[in-house]
Image (cartoon, rainbow, N blue to C red; front, side, top):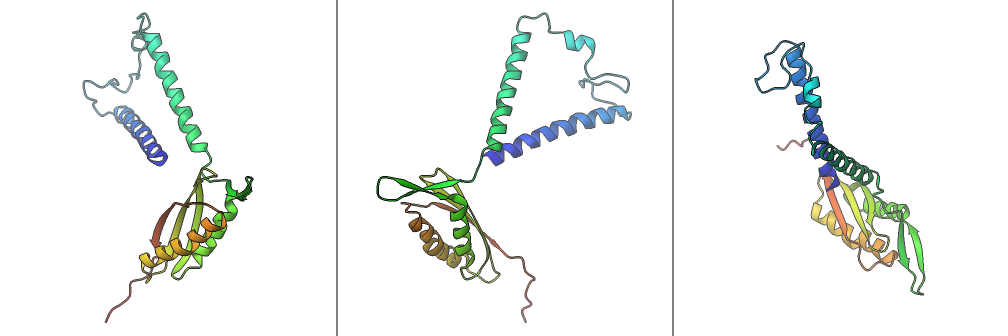
Amino acid sequence: MLRIVNRVLVGLAGLLLIVGGGSVLAVGLGLEPPSWWVHDGQRDVLLSDADRTRWRDEGWWWPTVIAVLAVTVLLALWWLTAVLRRRRLAEVLVDTGDGEGALLRGRALEGVLAGEAGALDGVQRAQAALTGKRSTPQARVQLLLEPHVDPGDALHGLTTQALAHARDSAGLAALPAEVRLRGVKHRPERVS
């Protein structure tokens, strides 16, 4: 969700900047603007003194400006905290069975999971990341498959071996995983 919001906001900001800057540049170079456009000619300014002070005496003007700016600041702060928030899980809570718990470093479990997934037949490289809560982690695994590997076999090996071992070794009831499979780019083979 955050990736989509980032792309939409950056795309809209870029579109506004391109349209605004391009139109000012086009008018500055001598193109005739439409009749409704705010910038009339090469010597014109975007906002005249009359345009800037037109609504100052209205009672609704300043509350509206303050509300719009406050909402903009709140949205910008939400976006910033969402972008800066840590996505990877630092620790996994392991149930030791004695009422206490032990903490397992998330990077350690990610490394073991990626190493075991990378050792599967037909997997050239594997990456793993843990997300979620420390009591209920979730795994994101990316597998780079060799050219002639059946993706179903690679996925079956990952779920029955690497993910099962990680789940059992951490004492987790479940370890849901999102797996992304990609094939290695290779030259086409000539068939004769």
